[in-house]
Image (cartoon, rainbow, N blue to C red; front, top):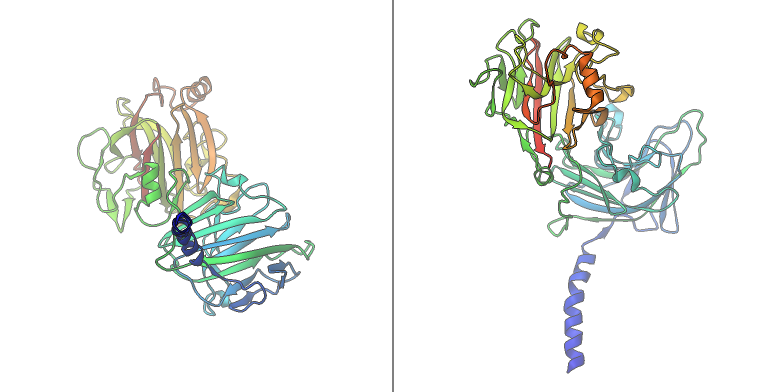
Amino acid sequence: MKKTIYSLILAAFLLPLVAQAQKWTPLFDGKTFNGWKQLNGQAKYEIKDGVIIGTTVASTPNSFMATAKDYGDFILELELKVDNSMNSGIQIRSLSKPEVNNGRVHGYQVEIDPSDRGWSGGIYDEARRGWLFQNEMNPAAKKAFKREAWNKYRIEAIGSVIRTWINDVPVANLIDDLTPSGFIALQVHAIGKDAEPGKQVMWKNIRIQTGKDMQPRPTDKVTPVENYTLNTLSEQEKALGFKLLFNGKDLTGFRSAFKTSAPPSVWTAEDGQLHVNSSGGKESGNGGDILTNEKFGAFELVFDFKLTEGANSGVKYFVNETYNSGASAIGLEYQVLDDEKHPDAKLGTVGNRTLASLYDIIPSNKNDKRFQKKIGEWNQGRIIVYPNNIVQHWLNGFKVLEYERKSNIFKVLVAHSKHAKWEGYGSQDEGAILFQEHGDSVFYKNIKIRKIN
């Protein structure tokens, strides 16, 4: 009798585990390419001992071994190993249409990157928008990939949320709704003319969950988020403490600088965007800046911005309205500027009035031109102020400057700037966030903030 009871208890314990295991469906049978097809380049794909091996070939474009079936919402797991000198990726929700660039594969790619930059598990938009999530905000993720070893990837694509893990370390959390469904593919990247062919990337144990029985992992309150949907907050962003500063419909929460009244008419909400309209290029010449009603101390502010040709604006923080400037309200400024066409970029010292700089104090480091957007395209700005007064400016996912507010070095830099006349400039404990009206047409959206304790 005791043995029977023990068997029943054991069965009750094991049944959920068995049921869970049965939810996985193999995508690769370990022997053939049934259900797969090769697209674009002519890299060599073969199967040995249950492993798909992709080998680089000279003079051929990026190659993809793609599923014949499309997938929308899914959880994908697989193991992979790659030559240290290679770059590769896993396509998800991807497309290949004859009418689009002659069938060029395009769509989300989960990166395989054994290089020192550590972007494995990040998300690249192949043949479309470029990098969407490249790990610079997630130092732990940069160390998750193991060179010369098998790595376990997990990819969850559910609704507009795409999340990745490497060896169970959370890497990317992307919110984007451009492509809801498409094929899965294993990439062998093209190689340069001088590169030696024959390098290999290998995949095995490829399995997938779909349907109502999927078991996504819970939010972790740690992984950074890149959200490309308009004026929304994902569950992960809420868990991190973010809230919207701009609701996409009107200017609730903002007021005119130096006043308690509503924002001036030069600021409008249009199609989910905050627009400062052109008024001839004069600073605060058509109603002036707008500020948040709320003040902030330590915080993380994220905002998207789009410049028109020759435009000038800025995002200021720790704004002090007791300074009588006669124009724009005074505060620390993340410069928003067309560096090529606006003359202010040539003034100041060593570029400290250029895009993403701490205006007239510290220049931003934008040496990598690949991640600078053309005028008329959307950029992402980020300002992080830590409780210890360390401040960072980020541009399109890259940290472009860092300084310590209130430090002696900061005070010296201020003393050699146009802000020297403002006693205690940038040193108060909290202040409003300001969006500057400089007479030029500039757009903002996806404005979010969280307080840092």
